[in-house]
Image 1 (tube, helix red, strand yellow):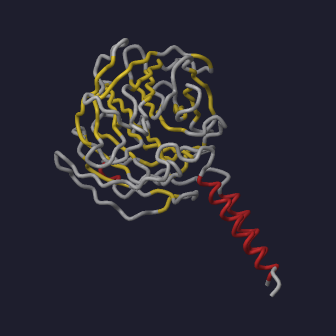
Image 2 (cartoon, rainbow, N blue to C red; image 1 turned 60 degrees about the horizontal axis):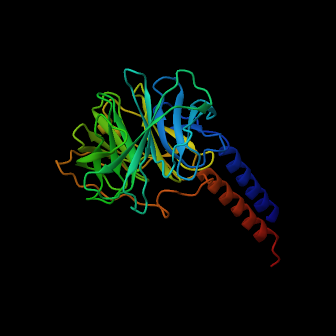
Image 3 (spheres, rainbow, N blue to C red; image 1 turned 90 degrees about the horizontal axis):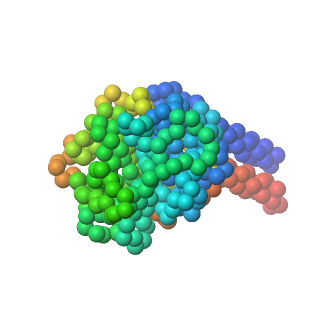
Length: 353
């Protein structure tokens, strides 16, 4: 009996390790892991943007306390193909990345918009022209300082580019009733503080967002909830994103086939969630349980048309807010749990009565 328990524990632990070693392979019409970051420097991926110039490439960056670098990552392998360094740029609290098309070529924008303690007077946008040839090295960039029209300090983790006119927006990460969408002035001017103006309310505790191609819809995400908004910033659907240890990013595929959801953590996974023809039908999409390799169905949340001033539920917030646990990924939590269970069974099996 004791030998049987010991064998069962070892088999369970080995099965858990094997299952967690590779991305899930699911049908295209279901959420699945697209890739995992392999670069050991990417420990706090805080933003995600699909390249407008290079097929099969996404851009990401770390949170604060890291070199000012943007990583070009292959979506098939998770390997970093190039590291773009903004030499001399500050990295006080990089929280989001987006990309705009333009006559001079696509522009990558990084938002130094984080402010957990709400203590800063100004924030910064950094722009990099996406290279035609992706190579590791220093890249030229422009920087613009900005402040909010009410002169208040606030935390934000979302920078959006509207494809129809390349207009930039910032979404503040605040509680219900305070969170808002802020329009970035155009054209931006260097050598002065640009002023952002409030254009709409926003859901509570938004960690990232993206316009869908065509600019008719916006997807915003939180840690455990996500929203589809129309062009007037009204919520038309609420759904459950993949549950990740520190869900920080979302972007849309250029062909509008799917959304990609990212998380902080070493070797963290980027999930692919298929997009229906009508984005409002994303309600109740569901996502994986923490550490699982396959998505788990969740109860549907009703799609709804909000009023001009929508009421948004407050999302659950993990302890520690924006920085999570650097170097920790949900799959390791599951693996350690399995090994712990095996050790417990071993102790019970060998204990003398």
